[in-house]
Length: 333
Image (tube, helix red, strand yellow):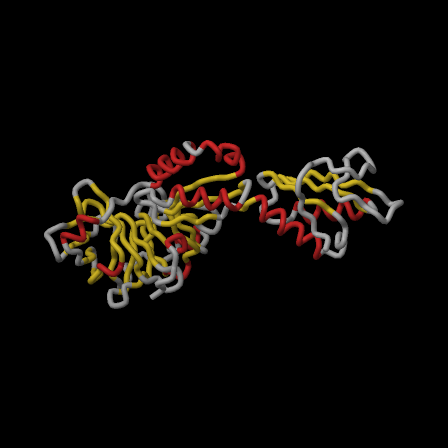
């Protein structure tokens, strides 16, 4: 069992969600087939058309990924249509299948099935109405059996009452946006960052003015009820400056040149001086192709007549005085 798998990495099947074939054509998820003994998903049931079409069963091995945004398969739509309509020898589960809690009289129905990506082993369920008008996340440790049209669980009443409701992505997104908007110092960072909730996981992407602010964003949202995980991919300008400067120092075309690197939410300004146009163009190329760089403003001055190059040169010519006060980052030794 893949105990270390993060929730973001798990495959989640939402019954009724779109299926995207390799050629872009769409279908619908209708069933999931389990090996009852191992509780591993082995088949996926797919309706070949969004409104009409037959239901076919395909092996899990053709799955690329699965989330609330859709299921992606490695088959073309024609290959999908040609797949077998025979129900496989598996425990078939769909959105009407019952979830029976043997510890109480409670019953619900399956909303989402999440599995580990490499093995197909059950990770958790989202169950409707196990508590009235509420969706709950039930982890695999409470699952005692999987059979045709039914999953049995054993959750004591006291434990059941303590489980928090599973909240929709839209509801979580609204609360997180409200929390971040109330943090006035972060407003200047909003143009560079994006927030997205998918299957209860918050993805923080883009650029932010410092790594410390990126950590602050994560700490502010960690307490949101129902949020399962935070994937913080924010890149601070401080780290971007250091990493890009190191890359310029490694490249033989710009090695040992005094180039200052000044990001602002991923928009990078290069300042200093070089000996020729080829070196200036190389610096632009390296910066533009560097991860998490949004744009490059190359203010490097070409000065072929001197061996002493200023790190921070004015864009108009050879004045070597600093045009941005304070500290700077450069890749020279």
